[in-house]
Image (tube, rainbow, N blue to C red; front, side, top):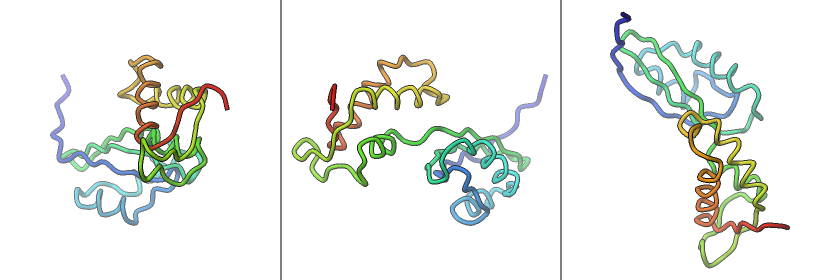
Length: 148
């Protein structure tokens, strides 16, 4: 039976795809737990090379007492996808009153298919993920329409 490793910390970061470097924010976050920065940077950049370079990826790093680590890379936030699909820089300043932009149901479905690959969402149906995305769009002031 394998010995259970003791967890030193759980670190959550947002790093651009293929852009992990030993500089901040990655360096200080991992350095304080004496983790191998270059090993993380190489592995993260290899895992995220299929994404565009400016895509913000959420990463959860589990640091162990023996200075080893594991990490899980998640897809970008729903709000990032919605802003890209709507072609806007930020959501509405007054959601519910002022409409920032519109997206189609097809956009929502495509975002849901991408988000379903996340480790925590893989067992949810596309319908439930889509409903969550529609709610996020509404809170950002983005209207979801059937046809443009």
